[in-house]
Amino acid sequence: MKFMKLSAAVFAAVKSVWTRGSPFAALTALWPMNDEGKYVIQAEGIRLAFSNHGAALTNLWINDTHGQEIDIVLGLDDARHYPFQTSNPVLNGVIGRYAGYMSGASYEADGIEYQVTGNAHNGTSLFNGGDEGWGRQTWDIATHINNSITFVLFDRKWNGFPGIFASCLTHTVTPYQWRIAFGVTPLLKPGPINLSQQVFFNLDGFKSNASHQILDHKLRLPLAGLRFDIDESGIPTGDIKSNKKGGEHDFWSGSRLVGDAVDEKAVECVKSGKRDCVLDATYMLSHKELGDKEDQAAAILSSAQSGVTMELYTDHDALHVHTWSQENGEVGLKKKQGSGKVPTNGAISLEMQDWPDAVNHPEWRNRKTIWGMDGLYTSFATYKFSVEGQQKGQ
Image 1 (spheres, one colour):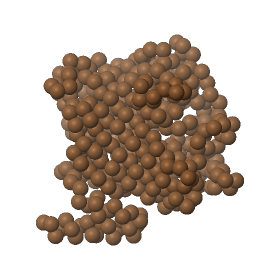
Image 2: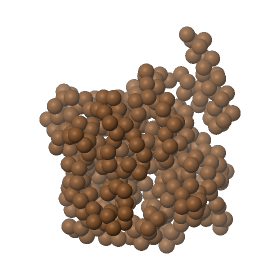
Image 3: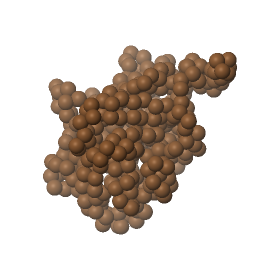
């Protein structure tokens, strides 16, 4: 048995060095997976599972107000199916090197204009890192212990980006909390970095009603008094708009039902001929200038049905909020979530990121968009969960 594991590790190491140049493949082959090919971490009140393809979150289990364990994120039952997902990024995967759109499929660094391989708008823009973005890659695993896992990736000029970018992504769970720590070391050439982790949540575990939607979830964005304008193609214009109190995008003055916000967009959706009417906007996070960014939540999502409340804390300065659309493709529920496909507005994603397309908006002065060997890129996101009627230690 030990010989077989050692042989597998050696084979994986040779293959990874040959294809991706990663020295961590031997370690990856030794870390334990469950029967579904997933890596599990856990702490009191919370349990997570990952696929190393896209470093994607596949499951997040938590007990609801009735003490029943529910899985509150989209995902696939079998991790071996993730490489065949066509979404960009792969479902619940990392978004990188660059989240959202990069207009013109180009950027300037040190007076040099770099062209990258566009994958949107007939190749004239880059979306979520491109067709070879980090959410479509197989990551290696540096460490995997009971409550933590660290993924590593070496981006060698994928999608036309220059230089080598070494990325480290650590997920850690403590009682009722999940923390993500991003770290990137640029090598050889400078380049833009704008990272995120896409996760689609349904706090009822898709068990609240026959339609499995989240229209009865409440959402509050206390720091989101402003949002980024986009053109008809979804490209940020560089303009910043106010979210007036009582208006369509007012999630800052109080909690709102997701369903009410979707209903307000219905007329706009019909006029534009959209197939689905969903939430889709990127909000500016107005952190206190000298405050600790872990003191105030950037987003609060809750469900009265399950009694689960989730608070998101992050040092990112923007939040892309969007609900599930059938235009994302058809995805089935996991076996323990029920049956059928995920419907429109069946889940919501809260993607922390930098200001969208900031690398192409020099008028946004003092925005750090290009990273070189003189600096290490770091960022974090922390999800804190509470359950009505449940207390830690029970």
